[in-house]
Image 1 (cartoon, rainbow over the protein chains, first blue to last red):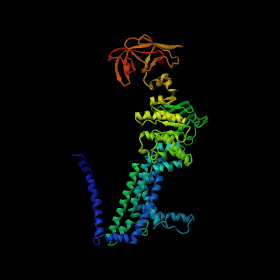
Image 2: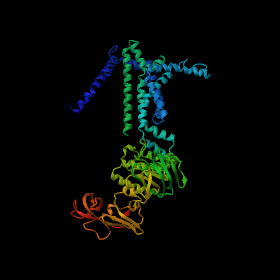
Image 3: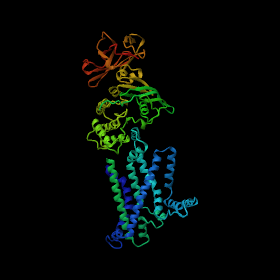
Image 4: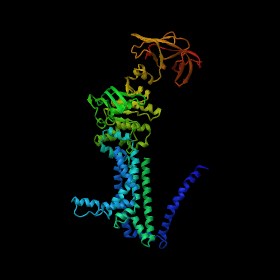
Length: 273
Length: 357
């Protein structure tokens, strides 16, 4: 058997599986978007002309951008401790990354609800300390959604960042120190730029994941901060608008595809320089 | 550029470094003179790199004292010493262009933008990188990266330049070229250079003095010619180049030299600064091949085992009747015709060329 055909034989089942579980259903969704309730691009026109849909798209984008920045920033600090910290710091970070990893997204969302709600732990403490008279609204709004999503997504940013930080040549940092550079300068002008591919990669992973979030915004947003995935769910399961839901899905898919392609190009250019 | 008075003198007194139970360095005392080119030479694990790291300030010694122009710097951290340093593998900033790499130390020192620009342009020319200023390191060849590393380490005129095996990644031709370059940079900058290598010919070719390390101890510190021709001990003699060591019986030495018996032949060495009396040592290139016993000088009977053609030179392996191996290095042009394995020959050398070990 020749090399290429053996290769196909090995990878073939995987391709078939992916086609059956992803491609076929997605093609079905695409078909709905141009056939329900009648053939044509009418649902796309409706979707892009509907102020509600546009509001949700815009909110999704905004929440995802904020979540991406805050999750990557938090993950950067955590990863720094993990990769370059003392043995104790490393252990603590590992526990803080791994334990939430094993807990379901639902449990974690309810956990934040318990912490952030008007009668939750944080408001309770702040009020008992006399710092607040009225509870702060920390949940059932965008803030709650952002907190919950950021917390969920931090571990996903840690791994690309860790691999970027581990590949930084220690001698380059020593060279900077030897030339008289202080810690802040070495961090901002040498270490951070050298880990830029990891930052971009982490940002991409977090952003793409965040775009499709459903459970966390549904629970912590309390119906007031509806994001795209929840909108699609509502269109398909709670209204007869299957075509519109499908059209929004396709638009989301396209947005993710374009973003991925742009970022991949960016990363590849960075690597070839 | 003119030689600058900026070059510094480094003093090391009783420097030691322990890593737990392991002693990496013990009792190193030496002075690196102003504007000197000192090479730290030794096999891997000999402590030479550890000593360089202690000089740079990246490692702290566990014993002893360091001075810079007479002032104590034992506890001064690397960033305050700010010696120029060229690392193995160059350690260039991959995200910066050649010019940005070289400008980095000047910006750390908060020099004016105009000065940074002028100095960078000057040194880029000096190391022969004109036209490559806007490239990233990954777009340069190994030799070019080496030049960037040198330029970056020299641009701020540090009092001392430390180099950690900078040529180990280069091929042989490029290595020779970069050695020339280093010699020129040393002359033009006048800075004190301390250079680590395990390549003995590099050390002999470049340095004003060579410090030879073995098992964490300084074995000898002297000019290249002296360490080669008057090694302080057997380790140095064997580490630097090839050497024939002939065990003597009835050896003795006096004010005019020394000598003894080797396989029935009386051998003498006229040098008076012997380090031992049990063996006579002579370099292969100082031995001559004779078809009959030469009338003057030392001579040992042997037969040819095999010869290795090296181009300009030929290496001859001889075996004495007593079974000792001898190596001779002859200019190929002086090789007698008709030599073959088993030919009886004599190896002869002048009494001034050998020394007692």
